[in-house]
Image (cartoon, rainbow, N blue to C red; front, side, top):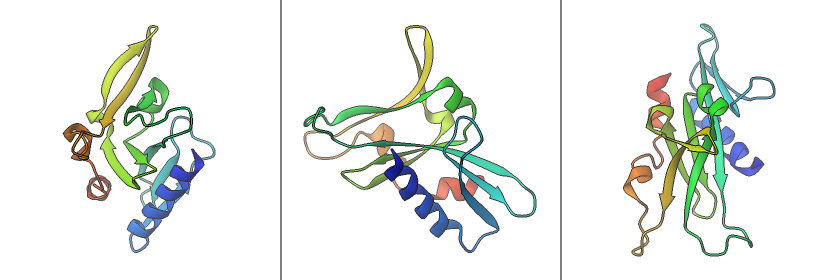
Length: 138
C-alpha cells in the first residue's frame, strides 16, 4: 500500500539526511520498493515495504503475516513491516524471515499477532523501531 511506502520513505529520509546516502522510491529494479544508495561508492541497500491495516473485510483480526514472494526475498536486504493502525515499524533483516510454500510456490514471512494483554509476539517485536539495523548495514 502506498501509505506504508511513503511513510517509510519519509522515515528513511530523516534517518539519513545528514549521511552520504540517497533514498529512492524504486520505479525500475524488480523485487523491492525502496533503494538506498551511497553517493560515492554506489553501494546499494534494497528494502521491501509491507503494510497491514484492519479493513472492513478483516474485522478485528489481529493475527496476520507480513509476507514476501521469492522474487522480493531474493532482491532485498530488509523487510520493513508497517502496522498502520498502531503506527509501528518493524525493520526485519531478510535472514530472519521464515520460509514456507503455498501450492509449491516459495514464500517468506514473519508472523505478527497481538496477545490478549495487548502486547505483540516477541518474534516480531524484537524488530520494532530497529532503524539502527539499517544504519549498521550501511
